[in-house]
Structure formats: C-alpha cells, structure tokens
Image (cartoon, rainbow, N blue to C red; front, side):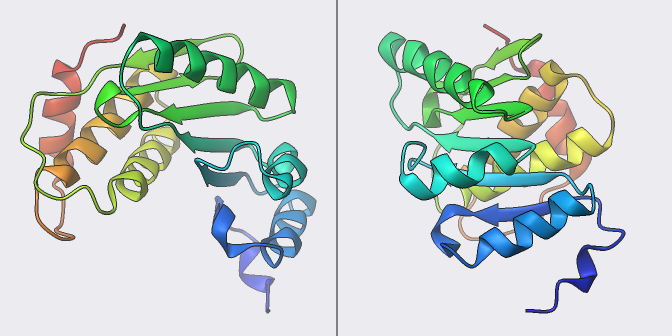
Length: 178
C-alpha cells in the first residue's frame, strides 16, 4: 500500500479487524509523528492488540455492559492500556456511557435518554466525535461529552445520516460526568 498520504496527516485511524496489514501503516505513522487512533473494540486483550496498541496514541475499547461492575472493569481496562504506553484510553460502555483517561485526568460520561433505533455505527460515530473534539483542543471531559453525544445521536437515527455539530454540542452540554 502507498503510505505517502500519511505525510502531513493529522491522525491515522485503524480498526483491529484490519489485522496484520495495519502494523505497517501504524509504524509509518509513528515514524512520521502522526497520532494513531486504534479502535480495538472488544478485543483489548488479543495478541494483535497487545502488540500494536502500545504504538497508538489513542486506543478505544468497547465494553457494552452497563452497571457498576462494567464501570470498574472499564477503569481496569483503561489503567491497563495506559500501562502499555497508550496516551489516552477510551472505553465505551454502550448505554453505560464512557470512560476516557490520559493518566492525569479521567472523565466518565453518562448517556442521554434517547430512543435507540439503530446501534449500527455507534462506535464509529463515537470515534469521529472524539477525534473532532480532540482537534478542537477540548478537555478530556468535553471530548467525552461530545463523543458520547455523537454516538448517542447516531443510535437515535436509522442508518447513517449527517449529524449537525450544533445539535451534538447542545446534547453534549446536557450530559453528566460521573
């Protein structure tokens, strides 16, 4: 693959399911000092993830179990990822919200009370929301709210529809940090 497009890129986004071929792209991004956003989904302890995650700047894990135990597990997963060298650990918990930590700051954000119509693509929408918020230079807390609002609004719509930034910001402002 031609990786020249990484020169001057602001971020490389990769999914775990792309397998071994993503390693070369990640290594090139690291060489070029391009931040890497690695979406490990629920595979946070697979061999590939254990090997590649330390090269990532951001690592997103999906833990779609609500409840207190899931919150404690999210904290343990984030701590483990940070211990592997990830700069920012992101753990989504479906209807249980998210936990985002960079080691010095941890934010846990709840979800809004919206009807779930279609959960397909919610993780991708969350990732896009986080990346957008990160590029705005927002705090971890504001990134957590914006990303959660983005994923939640996606779930409230059938299919893949355009989400309006002011609508996301309005919903994000109403979300509680826990």
